[in-house]
Length: 268
Image 1 (cartoon, one colour):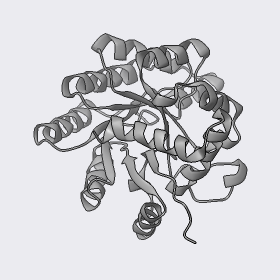
Image 2: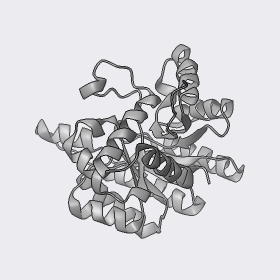
Image 3: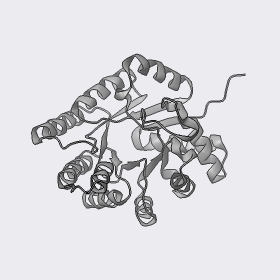
């Protein structure tokens, strides 16, 4: 008997960071195993160009996203303007894409502060403002790296520019900020750590189901039952099953709703 495939979407993965000789085999396994589509995010212009080529090889299966990841040293102005101009050109050409991954450097900032160092985030806020403005101008979904207190800063910008299609990936935050995201109708996505991280398990059980999605953030590795394993989009099967258990749902119903959410945001 053939295994029953749950409908799956990986709403956040760094495909271009996988080794080239492993990537196509991983994608084939994923698509054959029930992954209907993935959203492939970028780190910078070079990363975005590689992601665009990957998407071109798998039309309808890979939604590319173009942006500048905040957990790195600030780019110079010419580099940033080149990336923004390249994204605008993709928009004017009518290509399918989202904006991301963009946000604020929570982990860099808190690490520096833990070492007693100062950290000026003004340049990162300025860059995020530019991407939020771009999302508002183009109507594209925006994928945010903004957790804990940084999520509230992102909320302010999204509200300022009136952005409706926002996705907080691997979201973590306090109750008040989480309520703001839910009230605004913004999406959050859960990684495989929903199987073992209590704050993520609580989010999985309580955030509005119609705004929940699944992701891997691959090739980022996981712990718990995934310790020592290379991150693979098919890990989402376990995430879906755990979300279903936490919500007291049939797993096929949960899988269908989670996949439909991602399709509504990125593929419709």
